[in-house]
Image 1 (cartoon, rainbow, N blue to C red):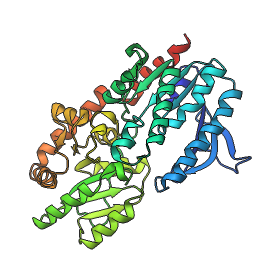
Image 2 (image 1 turned 90 degrees about the horizontal axis):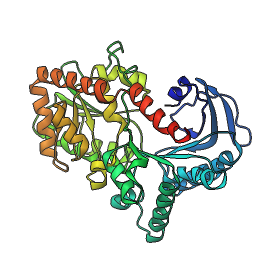
Image 3 (image 1 turned 90 degrees about the vertical axis):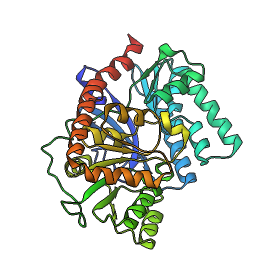
Image 4 (image 1 turned 120 degrees about the vertical axis):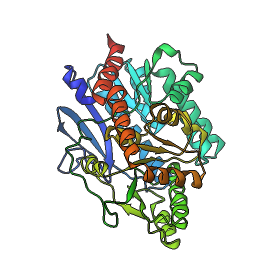
Length: 382
């Protein structure tokens, strides 16, 4: 998105923290907790705030607050025409609030998850005082922003329910990196998976929100049925990965393979050898229409049929476009049935994959969506 702004003649300063697997492109030591340099024409300010999905709640909270506080100073001192902030977490909007009310700068806020609705429904945060404070911050962020971007239909509706006029909100979901997920990527499969096996892949965080026990439940059902020709590959890290690996070992689920995270360029090659991409989330109603998961768009960009295990806008899209399987939540038998059906109809898998690719090209090409996003964001200062 930043590169699209630069392509249109704008200058962009991007403020970010550090991540255990992400690479900003900057090298060299941090000075006073930050380093700065040009990456692809973007002026990047990287704060020395390491973040990992394995971090506990208190460490995450402190990292989020530290990032917001340090970004406030940047928002108050840098030269710019507008400030754009994107969640999660919700605290990412705090610098934009200061920019709006103290410097009178235009502020555009992108909402990638609804807070506090999501953590409340997941049971992650139960303290009523904390939930109240998050609700206040949510209201203040929405009301301070001149324009907002919601990544899914449910997010847009959630913003509207907070009293924001529809004319100030645009829905721009995550997009497909069609330039990365091409047929020219070298295909590969991990050890333990033969060419004849049906390979179902999940690529993403192994956390509470992802509900990956559903995959292990389906793996157990398939093993009980004697379907050793259907393999599951879970790629990524997360707080619950050790527990998932321990369960798989305890139950002798040798049809489940765990793999370290890979870059998108490597993932593109894996997708060339993948039969089904798994879009898995915990059965939380806030997810049904309130998420826009990157992995779904990676799957369809690669032309891979998607197996989705919760209702909502993505399940409806999969059924409408006939580009995969939508199974009910918490139903391991239905999950296993879908994969057995996939294994029995390999030719039809190819047809669904082509429909997935067509959907990606028609509606979610990131290059096209970046133009829409850039026009909406910069339009606030025209």
